[in-house]
Image (cartoon, rainbow, N blue to C red):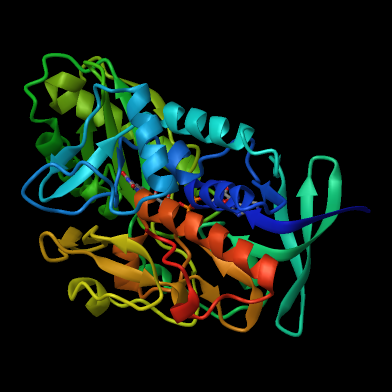
Length: 407
Ligand SMILES: Cc1cc2nc3c(=O)[nH]c(=O)nc-3n(C[C@H](O)[C@H](O)[C@H](O)COP(=O)(O)OP(=O)(O)OC[C@H]3O[C@@H](n4cnc5c(N)ncnc54)[C@H](O)[C@@H]3O)c2cc1C
């Protein structure tokens, strides 16, 4: 069996994993980034979303700088250079950055290409972990050529679902399926005509009608619509219950088709609309939350709590996609932010493993705020920096000795 080694292994090439790998490599750490798909970007790429959330304070004036400096700010700058016409937008009470998914991939590619200390392995999945005495010894990887084993001083789980930590036997929380937030399936549509600009209201209304007529499943009444960057284009985020059946992607594609046919009958703008693309698969908003030394709570968020070992700032509301109520937003006080402490990215019982991105140590409600992409990028960067310190010194510096990583 082929054997590899590195200082740091980052598993998962979504926004968190890419940022973790870049931050570590810039600190001089020999890093391997493995991604089971053929491309990087994770949910932020396959979801075809329009907005990066979690970057800014909510206030009266359009923010000029993201809350978190460092790599997040650099990525925002590079994205804005690609499409200077796309500026920060206010949607309801929050500010978001419009972006093109292809631009995000290009930015990641350029940043990774500039790092000679990173080896990127695509089409490679972590499938098993050997852990002993609270340490990960090695990780088994499957690629098209077979199985390989990699040893690393430090591992960061950026799989979104905490797969690595779970395989290593770490404790985690996972809400029962019927309490999990709604999952989503993105449908990019084109060919919208005679549009009166009201599709963000009309599409959810007609989805609810389709549910009443038994054409769509109940959760689909919480489907949303947003306009695309070119005339005649839009993005439908179809809501689905979080059930993970083997045929759920296939069923989602069928419902996407049924929805377009239904909208074509009742909404004139959809008469000639076509599906231009869909997300590769159904996308979960909620998965495993790996237990760290601290579990961030709803109260921490709503009281804008600050921590002595803070690593990331966030002001995104608690955005919950509830099965019976639809989307609810509970806001951090205007002009303020809360902090995510280092204890949310450590893994209880495993000293050489950190998490970053969606699977960090938070309560179910807190996840509604921490899971957005701007926050996941900042978490990835901080995990990469912390891993670099651990690799150098064999331990993380105590909070009072730590330089503020987020300045
Ligand atoms: C329907 C929906 C709509 C959303 N809309 C927005 C939005 O508009 N704006 C916003 O900011 N956020 C949005 N989000 C949230 C956001 O996209 C995600 O929470 C965020 O991108 C998660 O990033 P991540 O890097 O933690 O994980 P992911 O993006 O999930 O990346 C994890 C990566 O790990 C890989 N992986 C998993 N297991 C393994 C393994 N064993 N071995 C190797 N690789 C593995 C996966 O293939 C994936 O590429 C949305 C989420 C959903 C579900």
